[in-house]
Length: 209
Ligand SMILES: CC(C)(COP(=O)(O)OP(=O)(O)OC[C@H]1O[C@@H](n2cnc3c(N)ncnc32)[C@H](O)[C@@H]1OP(=O)(O)O)[C@@H](O)C(=O)NCCC(=O)NCCS
Image (cartoon, rainbow, N blue to C red; front, side, top):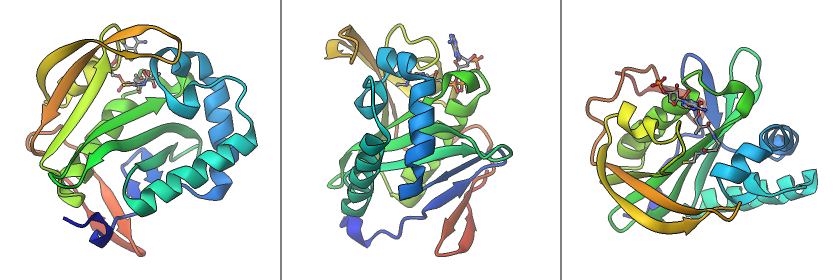
């Protein structure tokens, strides 16, 4: 498959959330999101979110990089906003993409003040539908560090199949050696119900069940 031929919906809505393609003006909300929850991201996540003393210019450069990844189909990431307050509460991504299969992994982060409201589970549910129905993936993985209490629950809540643990597989930004749980899905069947609307060139398409 040539991923450049895929028409990617750039906006996704659920009843509570909006996920969309980055725009340059997101540097400020991304900066606030990262600074609010830096310690948690440093412990459990990676990349720009896990770095200390990041500036707004760093965020601008990051968004440029993420957008070029979107255009090349090498990294697809969405900032996530809570609808009623308009606040950026998360990020969601497809990474380690292999378009020959095609397959990828999903990841998400939610800021500390919004934890425990089911947002990460909802975001991962959306990404799973998008992965199989829009990106036409044959396989999706979720990898999570053993010991991350919220993260290990999400694939189980979404009916992913637990495969194995890769022991001592990754060093975190904080320097911890992680054992990683590997969870997989081969289709979107049986996901918890969720209203999902995709917008492509101003046209709204349903992705409901
Ligand atoms: C992990 C993370 C994405 C979870 O986000 P969230 O929106 O709070 O997750 P949800 O509300 O969907 O909760 C998922 C499950 O974890 C539980 N949970 C949430 N926070 C928890 C915590 N601190 N301790 C224990 N369980 C927790 C929830 O109760 C829920 O389980 P339940 O339905 O059985 O009650 C978020 O905490 C985060 O971004 N953490 C920092 C970075 C990170 O870990 N990224 C993920 C890398 S794989």
